Length: 90
Picture 1 (cartoon, helix red, strand yellow):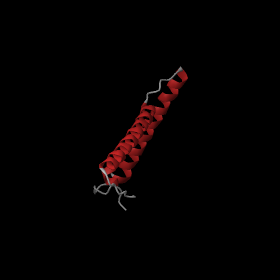
Picture 2 (picture 1 turned 30 degrees about the vertical axis):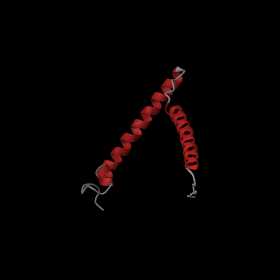
Picture 3 (picture 1 turned 90 degrees about the vertical axis):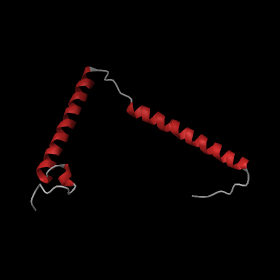
Picture 4 (picture 1 turned 45 degrees about the vertical axis):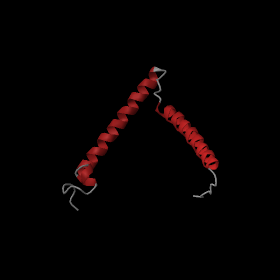
């Protein structure tokens, strides 16, 4: 990071104002991006509604199967991290 030499209080105040404007601009950009990502989209047709239900069901099933596999092979998530004596013998 490049350091700048400030000689007067006005230079410091000017730099402070520039930084505050940059932070405010980036904050607005982040806020806009976050709101567009987290906005709830309504299904416009019945087909989209059914497709979303199927998608959520497949995701839930996949999570269930992953947890079952972890439990069987490692004794659960904590066994995967090496904090449990249970699990598959090697």
